[in-house]
Length: 365
Ligand code: F6P
Image 1 (tube, rainbow, N blue to C red):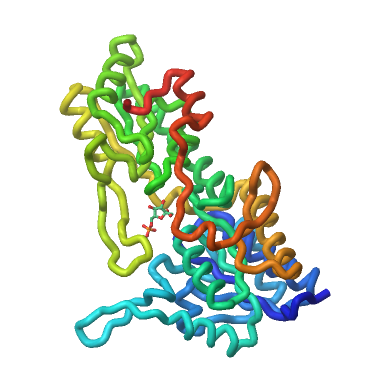
Image 2 (cartoon, helix red, strand yellow):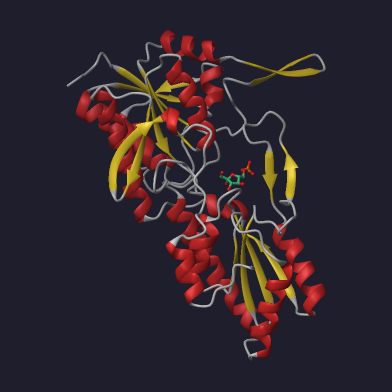
């Protein structure tokens, strides 16, 4: 069955990679071919491939055996933005709107609809294409779980599992050597990974971007544990967490990227500060991109398969310019225009913060 004049679709993965991307590509491609007899194109390297007209037809076999594989067979880019594309002429670098070129490339390959798998940056551009009349459907990806409009993004569960397993391992060194171990996890503006991995690992202190911390409170807390005979502490810190009145620790800036700031290093800063103030032996561990790699958990494989399947089904029902979401355990979709430019942060009164507080976790306040 073919509906609404859609005979051919393209799929792309934008932004940072994330476990489950291949599972979505597989679900999209197989559903499109099996259920609707569509032609499926894969765009290489996210929006960069769309700008440069780098895309290929995906056959059924191309997506076979990739369900469990991390990364993306299509490649990705977290600097490409069709509405502000970086162009260098001589010594000058400028940004240019090349979105019309992208639309032409889709038309030139007779592609009727575009599936954009990505996070907030990818969805903002997807919303821009929807405004230009392109038939677009978004699929919510990010280990950070900070995409507005959906309760959950695929990749998050895997990242939390990876972070929790790492913290569990670090626990033993903390305990053997009576140290304060500070583990930095990803999460720029939203502390979902830190909160979930912190609770799952029974960490003592959890620091989120949403709750600026007081250094004094953290030091008091770890010293208090030490005095009570608990001679070690585990501190989980989101990379975007900052001291009250302070600034995020920026590792570098990537000019012309949709979000130019690259974070990293807050754990090292904290290790130095806590050691100086308490005299306790402190070590910092930055988990970094380990959280973005590896095979997706069964939960993420299921979510990714549901999302990919739903994206095609909605398109074939004539729905366009939407993001597939999961709300209260049910699949649905919302207009991309409602998602663009927003992020979903951890509310101060979130039930998991309340549960963590109840079991004695400190948020450094
Ligand atoms: O948005 C996903 C994410 O992994 C963030 O948690 C992190 O801050 C950022 O991407 C890192 O980006 P890069 O891979 O460019 O270092």
